[in-house]
Image 1 (cartoon, rainbow, N blue to C red):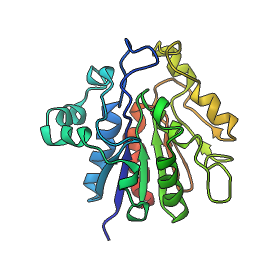
Image 2 (cartoon, rainbow, N blue to C red):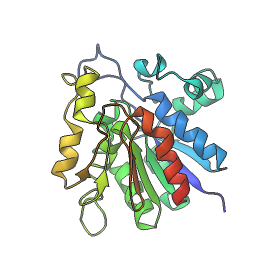
Image 3 (cartoon, helix red, strand yellow):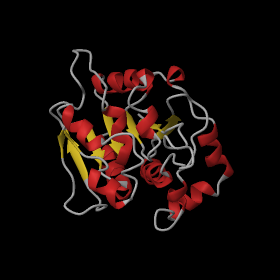
Image 4 (cartoon, rainbow, N blue to C red):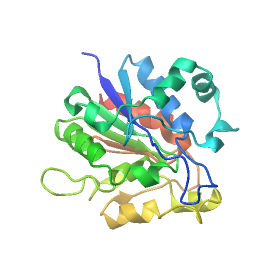
Length: 227
């Protein structure tokens, strides 16, 4: 039976200050997409509002702008997928084996409080599927409640973009909150690599999380192994 993956991307294209653009970190989508395609998985893209997902400009520059990102960015059919993403109401969670939250700072604004994404994530998890995120994607897991009223990440090992990485990237004054701190507040057993931006992935049962853009491929490979 063919496995089906649901990728989640942002609709937000700037920080609180509109003069600072952000959006989807492209390679976090393309690295995972490539891994899942090699396994023959079917793939769909959803966003909190449906429609266009803007790209983080810094993800289109060296070193983030690598082979898979360039190939996607140069393919009109692939770019069209990011112009017309599905909305949560168009998604039947029963059709999917895994959900994968991509990052980019835009997700900090529209992932945490999306009831549609929470519904899909809860159902995929409770039907035995895999829940995964990379980089800031774990913003989408912060407020997801399970049917028993507990938070999905409470008591579970997770990783995601670290506060030290926000500082090194010089966006600590732009971000709306410290997501590492927020995950800890919700009972997550947060872990991170010793060095900022080193690839790092954590697997806790069917929950797979990657710390930063360089962790996307490994995170997807771990998801594939579980499936």
